[in-house]
Image (cartoon, rainbow, N blue to C red; front, side):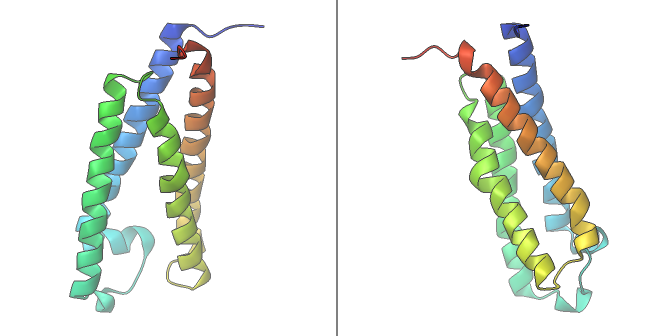
Length: 141
């Protein structure tokens, strides 16, 4: 059975962290720009109330923080690889659940959510795969 080298694992981990950071960083944009947010996920601009802007602002701050956390993980990927699992559970799982509920209630279009779900599913699969592949390289304390 072929084995994966430490160099390959380190590269895959860095790719995972940077891909996540780019994804999260880009997600901040529609959170801060209502116009871009409506263009991407749909919605009604008449609902643009201060309460929504406040919630989006809090979400954008948290997403920006997670972006930096993923970049920090990329600096020492093997040691910080657990961040990948925390990104899948609860972060990505929570985002998917929230969008499924929103789609079910008619707040967002399912058709607009499908690309997001595919992307998040792919990222999650990659994170879990790289995490599992890295297990042999982690020294037990």
